[in-house]
Structure formats: structure tokens, C-alpha cells
Image (cartoon, rainbow, N blue to C red):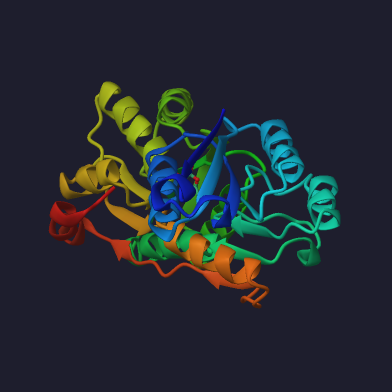
Length: 306
Ligand code: AHR
């Protein structure tokens, strides 16, 4: 789906407005919905004409959208790549057409000369923060702590990096053991389905680490349906800190959330304008983020916007 919104219509600045083509991953999670809204709202207030395309978590749709942006001669292309690999050809086409590309949220493995900057979180650090919570929580554990890991979309930067950061960090305590690790594709439905199967196969589970809130929330249902108490019988650590996740944390059903901020819109518009004006921007712009325990979630929840 391709929709135009923002900028020129509202400001009356017509064809003078910067045209940004943005290819979004999809609508797989609360995080993604908040990210899309942030980009659309920021485009509007920055007077940027946004051509927005939803790829429904399919790389071929993103490649088609980027080719369509090139054909339409947009000023700047932005995209959040669903997976890390397979972008060289289309990025070279954008370069040949002299259209700068800004990566948001997720990384690619292409030559960095094919894009101007990458704006988003440090996913390895997010995994490390989740792992560090477990290292501290189970500092005195004398017996194995059995962990289930629900991974994000296979081949995506957040799934690869969070897994690495987490597993490297928990290696500090040999009692912390990942007994099963499977993808739930960052969705609530898949998180529930995979957790149901993993609970049947693994009888003695102490901790769930989910790569995002939505999978954690789906798994929470599976845990309750199995007659167990989330947050107590099985401790739950997730990443994102969207409202539903924060509510579960405040309710004592989650134990810890590492924040991943979806509010990248304003920075994206700023970068797009600079790039369009021929100014240089930092090659890597890292989002500033925090962590929440149950008390912090209770405090933050009333003002949580997404
Ligand atoms: O790339 C960011 C990740 O994608 C978020 O953590 C997850 O919720 C989303 O689907």
C-alpha cells in the first residue's frame, strides 16, 4: 500500500516541500505502530511530503517500494530494513539515481557508502541490558536457571543483535542456561503459539526472555493458560516498553523491560532535510534509551504516549 501524507497539502508550499519515500517493515507490533505514527506526525509538522509504504514484513515488498520511489524521483528515501542481507542491488540503483538513503531502526550488511546514515537503537546493548538484569537477579543461584528465548524475525538486525548481547552477557554465570530459543517473528500471536509448544517440551522453565513486548505478551497468555503465574513462576524480561508491556510490568506479570524507542520521526525529518541540503550528517546516530523495573513502570505509565 502506498499513501501520500503530510507536508505540501497542509502547508500550501506545493512542490517546494521535500519528498521523502519511506518503506516501513510492517505493522507487526505495538512498537511498529508507534514508529509509523511518529514518522507520519513528524513529517506533517516538518512540512515534509511523505510517501509511506507498508511492506507487511516482506523484503520483496520493500525492494519494490524503493524502486517505485526511485521512479518517482523522491528527494530522499528512508527505510527500516526487515532483514539485514540482500539490499546491495536496490541501494546501488538509488545511488545511481542520486537519491540519498537514510536507514532507520534496523541495519543492513551492505557497504556503508550506499547509505548516508543509520539512525536507531544499539540492539546489542539492549540484549546486554536484558542479560545483565538476569546476572544480577540470579547472582546467588546455586542451581541452573532455565531460560526460554523468543527471538524476533529471523535474519533481522534486532533478533541477531539482541540474542548476541544477551547470550554474551549471561555467559558470566554458567548457571544461566538458554534451554530453548525460537523465533516468534515479533508478533503477539506467534509469541503465544511458540511459547505453548516450548512449555510442553520444557517442564522446568524459570525465565522467559522475549525480544519484544508483543511476543512477551503473547507468551504471558500461554503461561497463564498452562496454570503458571507470569512474573513469579516464570520471570519475564522483554524489550521495547510500549504501553501494554509497561502495563504488564506495572501489574507484576513482567519483571523487567529494556526500552527501545520508536520515536524516530523528528530525527528522521531533520536528517532528511540536512541530507537534501547537501549537509553532512553523522554516519551512525544512536537512540538514547533507558530500562524499567516494576516500580519504574508504575511511575512512567500515566505519561506513556505509546
Ligand atoms: O526493529 C525494532 C523491533 O521491531 C522492535 O523491538 C519490535 O517490537 C519491532 O517489531
